[in-house]
Image 1 (tube, rainbow over the protein chains, first blue to last red):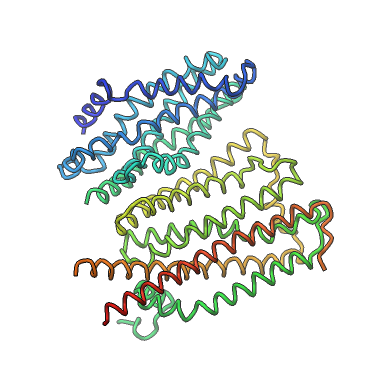
Image 2: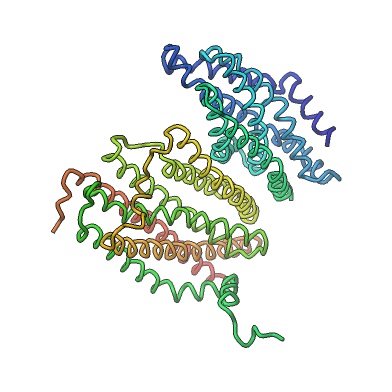
Length: 218
Length: 256
Length: 50
């Protein structure tokens, strides 16, 4: 399982692996927001937490079909699933690789991009923390969605449709935590609930995804 | 001691419906009656509510919208519950009738959710001044609508019937968990912003002090929508059972 | 016979019209598809039994 994890990380980081794509997309989205909403500094600061969370979330979506797609196309996934490694472990390894190469960089980059939206440093720290706690859920849920749509041609749009409603609780708690921090209000409940979603997803989704992998590769 | 042969319970007889022939037989006989009852209760409930109830002190004549909004909201949730149970039964017992019932329930549940959303927004407009308010209940229904769309889309996207049944069932179960999670999350989200001052009108209508003059036609309307849901569920499931048999015959034709 | 809905007439009436329309559509679609599939199945089974 560790080997699979390292292999996926390596594949993603190599050229053509799409590693920087999520970060670039995140940057573009954050740059576009002031054009859409107007340059008023105060207004940007108000929407910054939500926009940054949303940007990170959408950037995560981009690379989801790569999780299983490439291996499915060249037959590697068949080998992985029939190997001694249980499909649940395949899912966990791949979701973890996705998080390391997408969620983690996004979480670290977010406060920097937050400066573009007039987000102060203290709030930026909480933003980073909330993303660190929330992006595992995004990777886990996203990988679950990917496991459902493996065989679907051009399944990217369907994948987004399935995954986005499942992202809503994480988005609510994550963005809310940052908003509360910005207003000086206590935000620990939001972060706890956010973490609970990530932990719950890690505990339960492997079984659902394992089932989906078995179904798709029968 | 096999007491089952002496006195079959309701559940014994219910599970016999898992056999497609038994299901088609029973539903074919029951459908006209259920449809008639649905038409009768729905029409009388709505006519009573629209024409023969007074206005509310606070809400004026918009209170008449509850005869649409409350029943469809209930059916929206009921639909997803049915999908969840159907998915579970399919994954455990692999009896096609249950998953086909779930498949048939989805579009109906989706339409009910849409009606609940539309009537909720229209009802809210005179009260709140805007067509959409991020009220916890309405927002939960919007998320529920998206879940329905995803489920239906996945069914459509997968060619093999049994694979589609399996994958959509997994989705329905995970979705149900997240739907409940979302409901709680949205409550938290809205309360956090507005300190709990939002008054959802559905809550207002369901308070204990709602008088009989509103409650009785509401009850009738709820029965009507419930029976309508059942009617469409039976029609849809029968269609899916027939469609499956049709595909089997067509496949046999092709193989010669 | 139409009750006096006052200033909310548009809201209430549009609710009822839209809802009944949506119900008509979904009922129509379900009944139509049911009839089409039944027709095809009967035809198929006639060929099959023949």
